[in-house]
Length: 342
Ligand SMILES: NC(=O)c1ccc[n+]([C@@H]2O[C@H](COP(=O)([O-])OP(=O)(O)OC[C@H]3O[C@@H](n4cnc5c(N)ncnc54)[C@H](O)[C@@H]3O)[C@@H](O)[C@H]2O)c1
Image 1 (cartoon, rainbow, N blue to C red):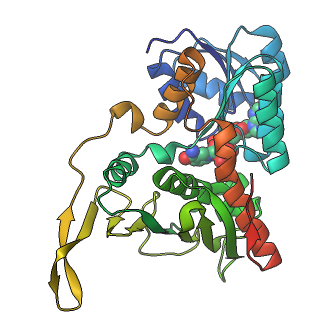
Image 2 (cartoon, protein in one colour; image 1 turned 180 degrees about the vertical axis):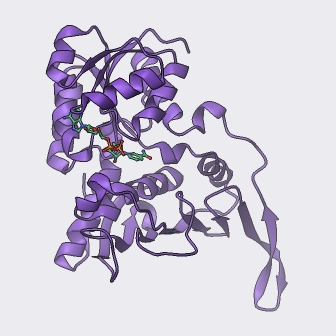
């Protein structure tokens, strides 16, 4: 899809390289790079040989540069302000997760985009992992029947430094949004309530909430559990977690990398207590445009602008993933199951 777009890229920190790579591949011209630290903008311009103008202030960039699109790759606490500026100035906005810090702020951004007839979407790159796309195909084929249960394990002892170590509820806010969003994609269900325990284990190098266990009740009577920690040294899981998806007639397991395997019950044949099982693995490769993380999100965002095909991660839908995070945090605070309604 050749692109006719010019973009203002805001936030030139660690994650921005992935954005710029995808934007270049999709033929987007980056007309401005903006960061409070101008040196970071300069470094990205040089790394990617961009002829972009450099700014340490978004207002100046919006005034001085021609663009149709704003890319927001700033820290989570800046998303609300940066996106608002883009949307009030007629720019379509793609932002890094999380969509917002509160549902009120998320609704405000969604309304602003709708009122100004602009596309507003969120980077949820992990639902565009090839493994996730393959599992979704297997589920669509009905091999395990109707989904009843999803179990997700995430144990990655990352030592990032930077803004994360000072954030509250860090695992839920910064990381769990990914598996929660992927669970919604795989099940086609939204969360209705959650019970969550969140804590900062002994020895944690994080300020708050490095571990969490949550149980969601999803639509369709599905239960989805998440057990995760960002301070569990040894035997770490992949970044995409380890998954078990159980249906009325079988199970699919994924190691979070390349190993996806399933079994369903052959109810014609029993062996003692158990039905015999038939094994299966994915047989098709996913559409490459849909299995490339940031590239795929950006591709769908542009297609939404040009052809009106709604991006999967448009903010009006992504608010459901954010609501899972905020619901889990609320439950952990009050020590009770809490409803989730968007
Ligand atoms: N999708 C993913 O897999 C993934 C992975 C890592 C980070 N992220 C997200 O990407 C975003 C950025 O993370 P990062 O690791 O690049 O952080 P970072 O701290 O390395 O970079 C963020 C940059 O934003 C700049 N900034 C902050 N407020 C600004 C403002 N108002 N105007 C202009 N610049 C501003 C900072 O100066 C900094 O350089 C976060 O929302 C994070 O959650 C997503």
